[in-house]
Length: 280
Image (tube, rainbow, N blue to C red):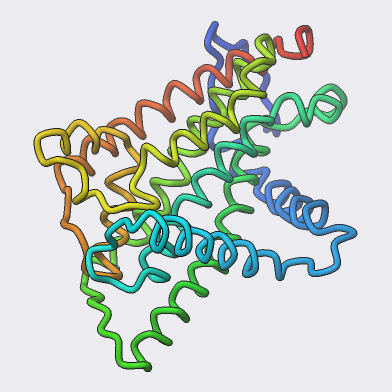
């Protein structure tokens, strides 16, 4: 009788390799990590998951007061709360992916040193956890749009809303790619862990979260949209609010950037995971 092996161990290349089949076989572990992330996130909190609603509302109201009323930034004729909520929902998911995956190696060193499983399980579970948060806040955004429509305020939702899943997928890939690059580098350079939060905050102001991309002078707009997050936010607002325009060329460049970042992140992550226990 011919023997069939259930596990085959092979030498890795210098840059490592990612076994997608093996990664898929650990899908139950990914779900367990998602559950763990939620439990630890809201453990010993009074309001628990209600913070998913309270936090974006408070942030949006702050944007309305500071940037809408005090600074007087234009929202292209759309209600301020809808304009700022749209930018906040998209950015909050991207920032969560970057901030949380950037701690993958350092925060999970104890687990990685004792049990074997594909290390990519952790950043993937983190991205999925953030996606559930995004869905809750996205529903809140839709409720706000419905309320504005009922009160007689016109909202120009169009067929581009159908690309929303593609925009969310791109946010997840880009956030995870940036996060695992930072995570791989922080195994040797801990300064990056301190700078990442500050860097993400600066990145927000370099993206059209609290202002419209139409406020950027047209001669500089293409360069501004080279920021891979900017076309995503711009298209999301155009789809649900009808403001701005469709930067399709910039979105295509953004996708190329996203793919490059993910490839570099995965290769670097695969190489670092072999030796990170010696440096963490």
